[in-house]
Image (cartoon, rainbow, N blue to C red):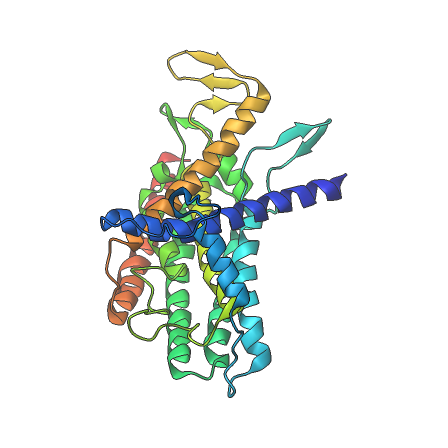
Length: 358
């Protein structure tokens, strides 16, 4: 029974990630079209139906499946093939420790709506995101292309620079909630302080801003897309085609979903809905609305999905709003702005906890 439950949760996780990741390939084009007063992708159709261009991701998949799998003659064939799988797998695995709902009772057994409920889930996330840069480095190096290698070096430097600030930005959160488990952090944010939910964004606003900026840099999206540089070097995947390019491409969108889930879990209550408990809504001014347990869990899971979709949309909005940073600006922001601010956030959090006795 336990094995079946685990496989069901894995199936749900992969289905959610891949569905949203594929849809983001359509959102990226359609949102840019709306912002630039264009129609956008709308030509692919099935039996005359276009449905706002939603068939374009399917057309992209068919195109990639039928394209030639080219490997540079002077490149490393094995590493060139391995790199996309590393990049895609590390992006996919990171979501395993993110809870998408509360613990539920099923036939007298408590089940966590989380693929892997481990006590060091946050540390696991940072380890996996750190490993993802190997896919970038190996893809650029194995292509035997100087532009691909340049993109890989940029990706490694960017990942190292912003991982430091991203990790330090959550230290204040750990000082407050006292746990590395993402499930425990999400549950703790259901408490009320002065009538407001104890969400991470309210107790750690500076940490939230730093983490979100660093998360966008980790996904290598505009304004931090120096490893790709479409108008300069094309990127670390310059020598890729077919489904290997498809894995690198969809892996980036999966990373967006994972980072959105992480931001929602750490700073926006995860699956928590303000004033919604296991028995229904309980408002500070005394009003109570009873709800059946099944409906409560459904609302909480949908709330988590809504938050993830919102932050995916926000990253797309930023992608089509801001220009690309120069490399020196990228490094300056990471080391001279975000790093000192993340250290300052730790000091301020410690002082507040010291004087409040929390």
